[in-house]
Amino acid sequence: MPLPQVVAVAEHSPAERCGVWPGDELRSMNGQVPRDVIEYQLLADEPIVELEVVRGGVELEVTVVKQAGEPLGLEISAAIFDRVRTCDNHCEFCFIYQLPKGMRRNLYLKDDDYRLSFLYGNFTTLTRFTEVDLERVVDQGLSPLYVSIHATDPDVRSAMLRNPRGAMSLRWLRCLLDNGVEVHGQVVVCPGVNDAAVLHGTLAGVLDRFSELVTVAVVPLGVSRYSKGPFMRAHTRQEAIATIETVQEWQERFVRAVGRRVVWASDEYYLLADVQLPAPGDYEGFPQHENGVGMVRAFEQAFEAGVSNESHDTGAPSRTGFFAWVEGAPAEGYRAPRTSSVSLLARPPRAARNEPVTILTGGYGSVVLRPLLDRHGFGKVRILPVPNEFFGGNIAVAGLITGADLSRTLAGEAPGRYLLPDVCLSKGRFIDGSSTEDLPLPVEVVATDGSSLRRLLEELR
Image (cartoon, rainbow, N blue to C red; front, side, top):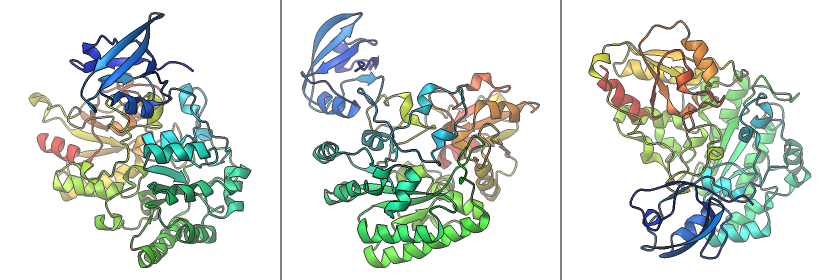
């Protein structure tokens, strides 16, 4: 098992005072070998932490004495120290199968690891879940978890996962719920496979067998031009409308049965169908905001109020790029946000305030932003959609904008102030590996929330 490495040591922290250095490899803590950043954090919370580290091939022992619960002050190089539990399903709709060749190797790693579900909100199918895993989840309070349901019919689910264990693995969902674990579900809808009558059956199965689920997000299949699945295709507008109607019908049933809506259709369905989104209050606190459910209304609400939409956070991890977990553990602990909206909002130079302002975004973002800006007196701000030629297909979200597509879009554009949402970057890199320094024009990276954008636009008036 490779040893986790200390990436950074916080100034004046207990670890710094006791002589831990960046570059040290962590062998054990209080005699235990932590398997992941979860166990690391539990051990680091102790008032006395005996560290065994390796520095330049030499083993050292360091004793850290601090207050119980006081941060140790270390940033660790990875979230999982032992081997990531990979996925043994072969879903046609898996987006990893739709990536082009030549990208960073870690982006091709398919995980089905409940620890990454807890840490980053990754959805797990539970096909590799075990009794030992259940015991750890319950004992350590690893909640919430995020589970891919897709279908409650065993035959449909196993066929979609291309894994016979998919027919029975939802038994673990029942066990999690029986033990009081908070679980959020997801149904990726593939047209002609698990939509229409199958989707009705799935939501009926949720109500009958898994009614304790906190939420269920119904999201459309994303299809890139690299998809090889013969049955994978984008939704038509009529299919999107039908899916919305199905979800609304079942919301009413869930409200009557358990007092909550439970199930929501993602914003993408409403944008595709050209149907008005639900009111902000209908999202019951935006519990699946990061999964694209209510994201538009939360953004609008924050923009109009001028306050951060962080108030809608329900403990779900803040993800700022595609497959954020592969870039390593957050610096401030396993549930910490990865970016700070304050740090991204440096006050612009006074001399530059009269320059034309352009917001770069995906196809869906342009549909949402234009009426919002016009409504609040920012009609002069230009919206420049970035067509996603890198992935193609029906990919139009800002989070999958690549440097290559940005470069094509910016080529020939006049100088000005170009605002780019940070959601398409992870540690300064786009998913295709390029950075903002590779673009033909300078861009200003801004936090992806309505309040941050509103404050910046107010400054640029």
